[in-house]
Image 1 (tube, chains in turn blue, cyan):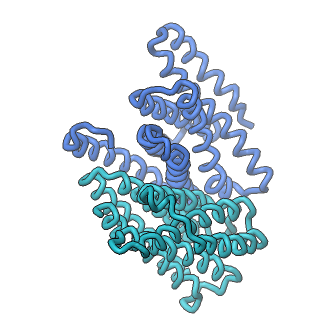
Image 2: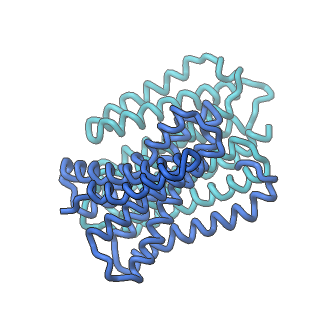
Image 3: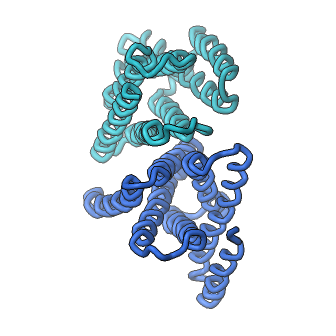
Length: 214
Length: 210
């Protein structure tokens, strides 16, 4: 049995002390990181709950339950931030990316606790793959929300649509992971390649657009 | 297995192409209908890709929860948004009895789908299909009656009507399942759905330029 909440406390405690020492200016960064890790913790509970309720196998839980639960859970802290604090567009992207990073980090820690840390090469590829996938889904939501939350008519549909895109991406990733073998490495490499291409495209196209928001 | 894979792959490729072309058009013209069109095709492509991979990779377990359905619902919502975005104020205030054809067709079909499938999913899709069909019928009739009718908008509304009708034909043909052979009408109707969704791109382009 994995005492995931104990792991959460151990990881959060030094970060919390650091957050208090670094002052108000950096506090929000740590809060989003905690929110991401807490979302991961709650997702694990909810995934287990739904898997038990529906009598799902490990594969079904991975490819059908986890993408939906995890992406919805990741969106909730961001929605809270958007609805309660009504921030300007600029801080939305760092917020969503930090939540995604916190989620991915805690997921990797739990994976290490459950499966051990012997195979360095695999863990290196997996670490980058999982991290890139969560960042990619976060980027889709973050960049998309900046666009759709400025337009009232797009808010509901846009948010649901972006959630649909991130669930789709996450689902495809989990599908390839669940198949194992060589396909698994395609899954790990795919989000990393997409993130790199996205960064490259941003460097190439944004200056031509005069730095406007796309 | 082969017809289904070819069908899913063609749908995915068409949606991906539509998404890429809409992206190029958006970067060139910066018009918002193209952005909504990117979202529509993007959701369609992702849902198709997920479903194609699922049918290829997971062969020994029946689906418990259809993740691809979320993508398809999102893409129908974006299509509804595109309709709302392209319609003009005079079109929105237009009243016509023929729009009652939408609930007359969609409600019985939705009740049938609910009787054989999932309540929540079919209810959500039924409501969206009803809204899509009602708005496209109204737009098509309105622009058909105008001497200087916007042809692009008329074509777009006609394609949405075709899309909704074909989707319903597709769902009707899927139960009972007639096997993974080319004699199954499901695959041919699905190709028609793909064709109707791809045809929306030139229609939207024309409607935007009018």
